[in-house]
Amino acid sequence: INQHGKPYFIHTKYKNINFNISHHNYMVCVVISNNETIASIGCDVLNIQVAQNYNIQTLKNYFTLYEWQMIQTNKNPLLELANLWIIKEAYVKAIGLGVQILSQIKIIKNNENKKYHISNSSFNNKLYHIELDQEHLMAISILYKDTSLFDPNNQISINKCISKQQLSNFI
Image 1 (tube, rainbow, N blue to C red):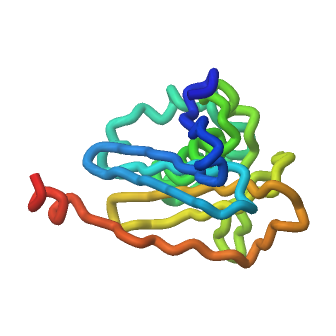
Image 2 (spheres, rainbow, N blue to C red):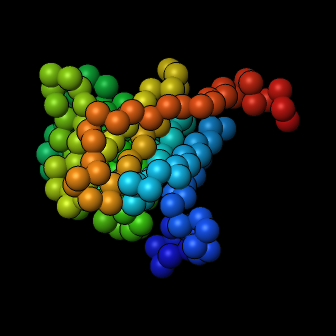
């Protein structure tokens, strides 16, 4: 584990394996890659129903003024906050730093295609924002080692997604 709590493999046999884990309520997200072009990976998952209990005002300091305006002017401020939060969390986990820098990360939303991106990133970054179902959101941030390896058209596949009801069958 690095000084900010990001786990990694020490053994050189696993040097190209990147992974990250997130959980919220009953949902767990595990992201694993053995692609040698990827420098790091991060993920976050959030249950929107549980997030409804949060006091939005207490989270204001984690967002830029631009992001806070996006939240306040959205038809569904809680959903927009949740979207921005998971993207920031996934990115921070990918770069291996703690939540104390969340307010320094600026997310821009393209109003035409509704896609988010990090505007002040010094990394070759690809974001995936996924609505798993009506209650759960997930974000994955992938950092590539250098620009020549970065392909913005690369896609990821979700190999297995298990709902809370399916999971309860195993318990």
